[in-house]
Length: 126
Image (cartoon, rainbow, N blue to C red):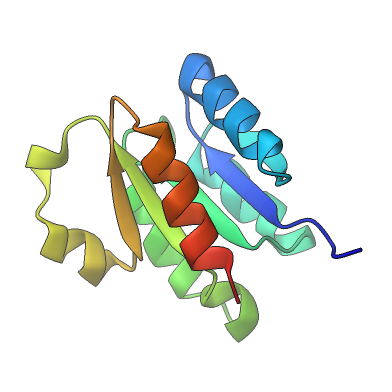
C-alpha cells in the first residue's frame, strides 16, 4: 500500500479550494488547504508535501512571494517541492516570470480539472 501523496492547496476562494480538493481526493491524494502564503510557510515548517498548488492572488502573501520564500528554505527537500501556480489573470505575468519565480507549471482559472489532475500526477510521479 503506497502512502498517498500530499497536496497543499493555497487558495482564498473556498469554491475553487473545495472543487480542487474533491477532484484530487478522488485521485487518492491527501489534501490540506489553506487561505494564504503565510499559512503555507507555517505548515511547511512542520509537514512535508508532494506538491503545492498556489493561487497567485491571496491576502497577506501572494503566490509569487510565497514560491520565492519556499524556494529559499534552508531544507533542500522542502525547497525543491513541485509548485504549481493557479491564476485568474495569467496576463499579469509571463510564463517566463512564473518559471523564474520558481513555479514548475501554471494552471489558469477557470480551472480545467483534467489538466489539474494531469499536472499534479505528472509532477508527483516520482
